[in-house]
Image 1 (cartoon, rainbow, N blue to C red):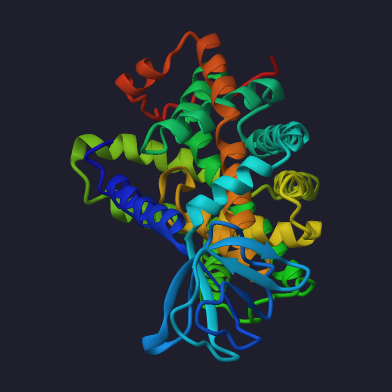
Image 2: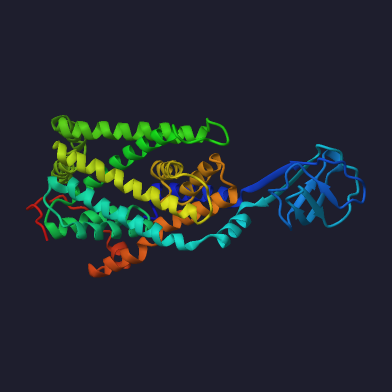
Length: 419
């Protein structure tokens, strides 16, 4: 895992975004509304709402800039009092600004937050995971019938491993455990995760486009990084959908392409890869039955409505006055950035893109930073203890899994049966 180029690229991306996220400064600026004389300590400004006691402000321009600490703020009369008299005369409209580290403001916002909202937020998130299990059962019907409770357990284990261990080991273990218990091809089971990802991406892109029509941007309607995420996601997931359609409706073409590649492999590996190719075609095939396709689509929508509800509920704890559909937009951008960029656990990317979306919506940077950080923690951390418990019930431990690095086996046997 540590030798994986993909892993180190992901770590580098995470580190870069985390540095920007935590070290960014918040600049707040207003202007003088009444001339300031030498020795004066109180000044009138256009808007004192963004200033606090202990803020260090710069007043003036060019050679007359002075740095002072605020000791009192009168928000009603839009005036501030500084710790010592001014050495220069400052005229009307001269700038008054302060810069603070976002990390400091974020800490204050976290201290003021109402954490009781975490209870319903976590409950709704786990409901979304249950819908994931229901959806996976419909996707897996190509291979047999599977117990939803057991699928829920494996999803939780998979999420836990993906959050704690590099290399997407959770996907491999999900396939291994289902294959071992139900005696089906592990490659085919693993391939169904690809179908899950495509449906996830398509639902998020759909939400993104629909919600965009109803959301008012406070900082300009066109934001370059927002357009990159939007159209990049469209391209990636439509391409993946096209691939799944070719596999489903033109399996012979898929076999010819796959076998053309297999011919260049060593002789000993060809037979195994041919088995894996057939199992992969089964696992990646989109259901043709309308009922199954509707069920998979409906549960995919419910999964992301639940996750969007988690975002919305936590935002209430920070007094972020944004409607539900606006928080759906934040969820779409943050999650799609997690999908597109390969940062482990979405660290850095999820946080930066989520916060920037909140800023575009007009949310103050302190509340936006604190809220997205708590949201990220909520979708990552509560899963881990439950996932480790389920891992223990399978007579496994994190150390055993990492040591063995379970591999997918492409030996299809009998179909699964309901437990």
